[in-house]
Image 1 (cartoon, rainbow, N blue to C red):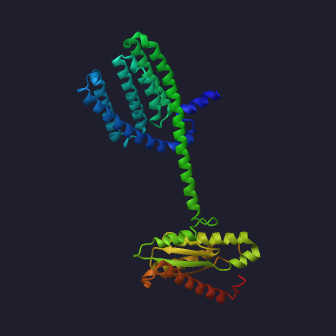
Image 2: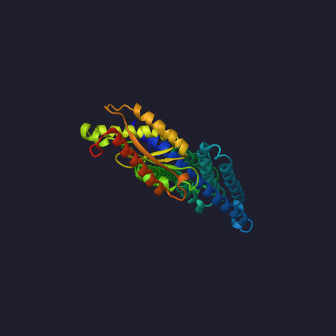
Image 3: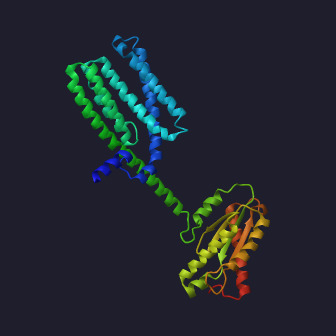
Amino acid sequence: MILLQKAKQMLLYGGLSREEWEKVSPAAHKSSRRSLRAYSTIAFSFYAIAFVMSFFTPSMADKRPIYLSSVIGALICCLLDKLIIERHPKALSFLLCLFEAFFLGTAAATSLVTCRADTAVLMPVMFSLVPLLFTDRPAHLVLVQEAVNIVYIIGTLTLRPKEIWSLELVNGMIFSSVGAVIGTYMTRIKLERHLFEINARELMELRSRDALIDQLTGLPNRRAFYEDAAKTPKDGELVIASADINGLKHVNDTRGHQAGDALIRGAADTLAQVFGKDGRVYRTGGDEFQLLMNCGRTRMEALCALLTETEVRWDGGFEEPLRISLGYACRSEHEGLDTDALTLLADRQMYENKSAWYRASGKDRRRS
């Protein structure tokens, strides 16, 4: 049973699990389609040249019908690829099987029609070559190979001289089996390569995203802020804001850093809730946040009023509510200043508001 399951897995999914196959199949689809286009074009060109040459080369004249049918077959594959695959991607497997059957059938017809012993090597070569062409389910390849092999054996017994029967029969049976095995393992190698590339790309993307995300709050970090600030349009409304949590040191000293982390997450959630629809919030330091806002002063004043209402409602289990000091600078009011200069202005206003809050509350800023 285990061997049968492994054989089934190998034939259906190239040795991968079903989940891995579904993950890698789009890349395999693209690879096979590129190969199909290339090989169809090559086959069309080759057989078209051979068909023309058959009129000038007596030894090729008996193969002229095969060349003509091969030109038509390659042209049909090219047209089907352009007309059908874009609308019906699942039809690619059928088209691959059709092209493989066409490729092997052409070789078989050439061997059978010429009836010369020196062409006995043609089918073994084709049976070994065709499995290397595409990345598709091995079961499709095996079915095509064995179907063509059966037709070829019947044709050999009907049309070929008796003195080469044994050679052709052995070639057909051995090399079709060898080709199927080679094709199966080549498909597995190709699929594993695609899977490795996909996993490596996903890992790189994950690391790239992690490099721009603050792990505590899930907000973009300082690096993300500076990258986004550098990409802001030169015209249009822009407000850069700086925010800072009041009393974080006091919470850390009296309740521990876990409580301090909860306060930071609360501030992050509150800022994102209030300002997230009009811009983006970044955590740039321990209790520091930056905002890039796509609005003007009127909208920013309304959002600051909403922040005051929202932070009071936050309940983190502390005796005192969440308090955030915020300052901002509008580009429309400071023409000619870049984002760095606007950030400095926002920082300055934020620290002024923070100092005013400590004076009004009567708390020592150095201890809280």
